[in-house]
Length: 111
Length: 116
Image (cartoon, rainbow over all chains, first blue to last red; front, top):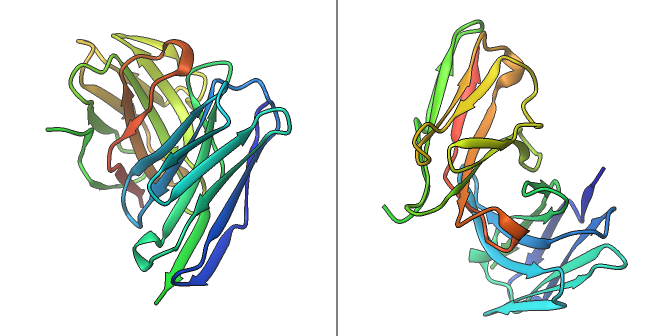
């Protein structure tokens, strides 16, 4: 059974820092991995999707990497801003078309 | 509308009552998914549709939960005899298709269900 873990559970940093959020999964047979952002009381916003054949994806200040063999992904956020404060969720798609989510990393960036 | 919409945004009901939650996917998206998110947890899969048929309902917790998508667009999640443990945010997502897992799932804002 696929299990997804995210570390750390919470993170508080000053504005301007570069961050790394970690995601690990137990079954390496995945179709893709997706990173989402969730603001309080809101739905999920897709940030990056990495196909199983890819190693990384970039969008603006965000870079996500995927090491399928070791069951790991990282989300790198450059030059963090207070507007980046949110919960970040990773999810893997394997076997079927449903997403298996981690429990998220709650990020707070203070000015 | 450009995104996935869900109604109502909030629903408060009493234990034992019946509720319906509605999801309107992005136009043209053939795949539709329901997830449930409890406080402090990631979303958990409930069911997904490819067109009108439920392709995978393995996440439905018990037979009190049922979902339909009669015309391949709007979907309704139905919960009978609600229990306090059903309280959660119910999220809906849609994607272009479910084949091969290549497509991004786009999520709605969710329905917050509270069972008193």
